[in-house]
Length: 71
Image (cartoon, one colour):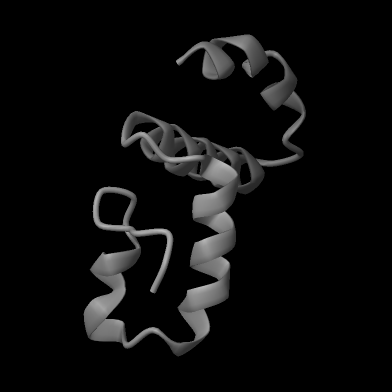
């Protein structure tokens, strides 16, 4: 939670309500990955690598609490 409190004044410059919402969603995903003991950078890179050929019925495998670093 510290990064959230640390950057809240900077988020005033998110340019719009939509930009602020997008930033909040990104921070939520990063913090969720950290809470689940993952490296957020590795998790996001893995998600972006896999998402294009992931079946829509199996998207839950990409959530932080279900994700594994290797296929």
